[in-house]
Length: 375
Image 1: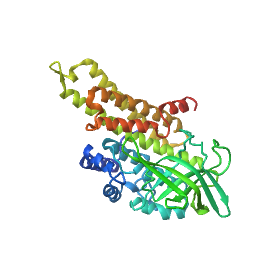
Image 2: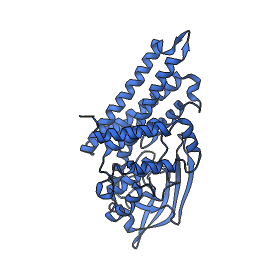
Image 3: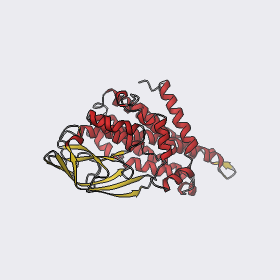
Image 4: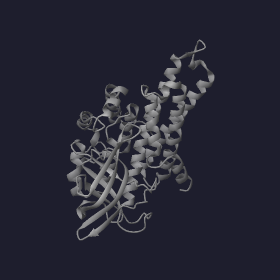
């Protein structure tokens, strides 16, 4: 496989890298995270102006006709700065659902405003009982005339606090854990009967618990076909896994480089810590884990572009490796920094917390190992 980026992708990579270096030191991130809405609206507008929000969408919808590699390039650089702007929720999840299953009318209505950054959306898929099983959906959508009535609860919905629209995964037929009978709907966030409980997450982002109490949605707001939403959901989440894994690879690179730099400066027994062989071995192990993750990320991304169905097993392998290696790199970075590694003033702990959250999103390392071995 050719892992070389195109000239356009290299330019995007350099542009995002420069943006992160200039705008995302740790004090600035902490400041942005502590204020509503949990990200910088100025930065979000800048991302729209630079064209990043339109990269994955087709040209006929106002985008630039990019693919998962373009998203990988952006998310890897975002991972190096722990960027707070809701690119994943808006572009990969919400926008991905519209792109994959939305009608032409919905695409014309939603995608231009999403690409220009004036509207925001998210995907509500997880529930209390479902853990990591995408097909475990209890939230119901009952048909009444030309409308559907949605009742139920959704958990850990990213960016719901700022979203103008929420794509809701519902059960329209079948049993609670059947793949058949799942339908996606586009719901306005100000609909009657929709209630949000917003909270900050441990990694500095924002999420919400959402309750749907007899929320009415018209038939025209259906994403895809009735009862056939599972394949759309799986496509969206696979792309989200690739995006999250790219972010994790960027975070791991910062952690191992910061650790190498610290051990070269910190002295013990009149020698830099980097002189001690056992610590050298530790840092080599961190580097090897990072490189393995990056290689498998490229492989999974390329396979997904060529054949998403055949790529499924590789995606399971990737998410397992990212979870396992991310925790390994994070733990060693914290340990080699000593007590400083767990302070709020040092960015090492912030990166480690983000890697822990990434492991738990869309299935942790153990979950995907089980999926991989039983594929």
